[in-house]
Length: 69
Image (tube, rainbow, N blue to C red):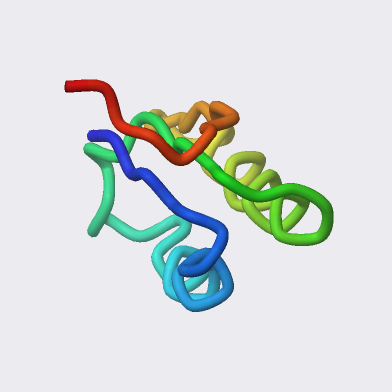
């Protein structure tokens, strides 16, 4: 349900997420913790906007790159 994306991996993951938007393959995804900004964050926000019209919205949370224990 939570996806943590470091800035290093976001450019590779965003295209895959775009392909899945509107599909039935990621309905459990609820939160994207994002360690990025600018154009990458805008791309993620587009994915979030597309999911808002479904019954499976996603929240984007700014992440500083450290997981809590």
